Image (cartoon, rainbow over all chains, first blue to last red):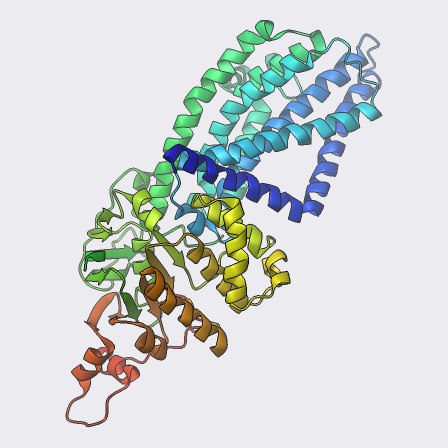
Length: 275
Length: 291
């Protein structure tokens, strides 16, 4: 068997395992889906209530609901990818299988590729289900939306989120007891600076500067252009290339950081401790 | 006969970290390499535990090599070092000529390990867990499915257990699944870290029969750690007795007994050999956690 086909087969191990896990933990998946739908609905209702809250008649409620909805859906998509990637280690810590997996004759890139492939498919389906349910509740006008270019934007943005996820996944490796919880810091910071529910222009100086370096800023802007204004892929290019460029840097950087952390864990015996 | 494993002056300690962890991430770890418990520095009140203390031995291809010792004796650390799960502070380990630090991927292709704690995705069934394991080792799904059923039935599992979550199984049964998982990849070197701890006598015998068959039929080299004197005596060609991270004796079971036979006509047991060589008795496996 060639090295490539061997590694491909090995990477499918993670796809199949994760599929089996969500099948067995189906009740948890259901709870998570209900939570995500209600969360997205709650945010969208802010748009509907804006007229009453602000007392301003000039508010375009339809536009505002869609603006918030795109924010919440894009965020759900990106954060789901992030959490599946960080689960690379935390799920193995939880189950106590980390030594077995890290002893297997596979490259870390293979490991990440399998987890990434699964996370992309899962996140697209998960976000799609939320969109369908929400569109049944709200009177959403998607006649101007370009769903194809929105999907392209999401996929381009997911590359950099994989890199960030790989970086964050070292936390459960280095801190067996609380590492998993520490990964939330990454996602909270990006939620603040990337303009999920507001334009980044409203942020104060330093945060606005930081927003430039968050891939989510470009994904959100691009997705809104596609959904609200029907922008085509070429029109989204100014948003696509920064997101892709960040991914090109962040994935190798994430892999390098992961390798250093794995080396450290093997030197200090941290693999053995199940948190 | 060629060497399957060469362990050369290996030293491993655990304990303190000087300064913040991120400093340690990028600096090579140095070790003092002397004594069981190195003195703590003024900045690190945590005691340093020397788990493996300048250990050297070789295991021949096709040999069943036993490591006998109490909990905390360094057996599991040694297995982890060979399994590429830990990096030695000093010394060198090679498996079929490949260096475990510099060529881990090549080593990993040739080995598999069964640890004392059967580590599985508990909600998944034995079939799902073993399919995961098999794919990691590049095995085809169709063949694996057949083999899983075959091996597990042989180890005494019922067919319906193969498709139910592992969390519903006893520890003994889980351990058998762990052994089946290791067998699937047909390793040239099988590392068995107390594989029969917690098994009932019948299951123990079944596992021991599999170990013998692996060597006889497939020529697998087996490195086995155990507390069980009988198991060591009946299975192993040679036994290394480890205590406080050091190998205090290494010989065939008969050779070890001859060392302490003295003037008595009666052959001593391995328990007596251990007591004589270490001044200690082997403790109960459940007493404390292994280093």
